[in-house]
Image (cartoon, rainbow, N blue to C red; front, side, top):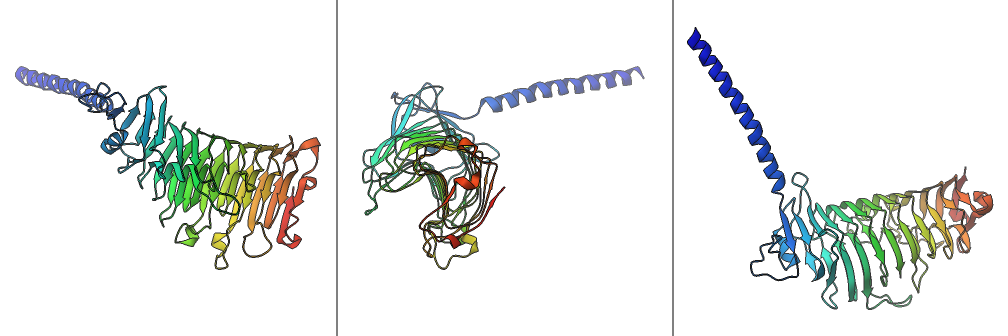
Length: 411
């Protein structure tokens, strides 16, 4: 009996030791997994080994991008780097994003080789990628772009970057189309949408855009979030959601939809050859425009239906745009414009907009609100200069027949 008890005690002690060892060993494995997160360094300081380590960083940013896998962080050391750079691999939900970021507070300038008409960063149809804290610009070519998506990318984050001096060398005129310069361009040409892209807290300024915009969401794009950006001193539209232009072969999908434009500041974004808005929603549907501040543009915010073909259906309508809690002031022509530009069928009608709790109280240079070809616009709880009522501040475009402006409701 004593021997049996001794065996039992020995077995229990052994099991307890195994449990303790397992806990300690398990913790060490988990710690090792966390600490082994792949980090690649890039620096312009040349070295013989160039392994991508902190001591021996890669010189080539493209090489670092090609070596990165899901969960990899690429830290770029201070300096000037010339692209173009193309992504060939994605991160994923399980292992995480591929992240490219400036190391600590070091200043990293990313540009293109001289006179190359190409995107600095071409996302190449990849997903789960973050680009953070980079200075992207000082580019001159006929057609240039800071960051380009056009192959159904998803789960992309562009955060706290600065886009400056992105310049088209052929800006064009009203009679003659010119080149294009975008800071960020989402061009949804495929049947599968570009989706879940987050453009957050960036500065976009002093760009010569020609016939393009600064932050542009065009074609088949869904669930795009443009938030807390500062867009200023540019030569065309600041933030644009643009559809019905024939970019996507499936015309029913050729619209940005279910997108949000929130808490951005947009000012002094004016074309020299056309009237334009700081924030422009055109050919899109189901868009929330909330909490933005727009001033010193031609129009603060515009909702239009610029592109319309005779064979379009209700699927192509510009509709369900909510404009709320924005501040619009000191814009040249008006704070807010809604509607298609012409009486004929060359432009469309804007349907079912809600204009709620916006602040026009500082006043705009000419008019507060202009309505063109539209149907079903609700105005509620908006504030105007000298406490005037909303109907007194709504004007109707002189070029549009009054019967094209229908179902306007004031509450």
